[in-house]
Image (tube, rainbow, N blue to C red; front, side):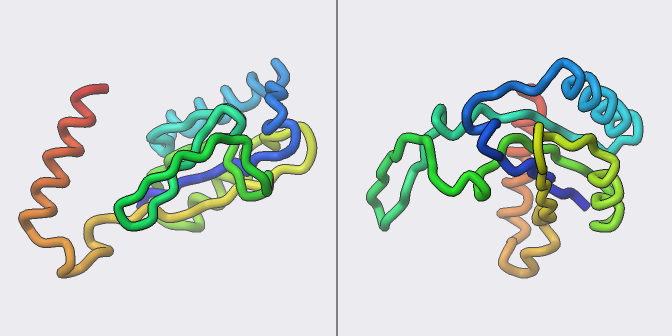
Length: 141
């Protein structure tokens, strides 16, 4: 099972306040544990939403909206992609994480869809095409 583990933004992360050297060292050690355990597939911090954009879709129209975005509590400051046996295991790993923000922190855990989740809607042809795309993407890294 794969899970997207998202570090929620706060006022400091949205203001571009960088983590301290101590927090970077703690996170580095945590990430090393995740990698050694075969849990971490990817993980990165994100720039503030002031450096981002949103693309809004309405039928065939596309509208680009520049950041920053309101509702800091709804924004993401970083993420990991975990591969674990269960949601409970993902939770246990997140509970070991150093607090990622200078003040209070929140991390959200969401399961990533797997092909089996789509049932008959994912035809064998679509599954094969998706697998080829994933292999091509992996080869480019």
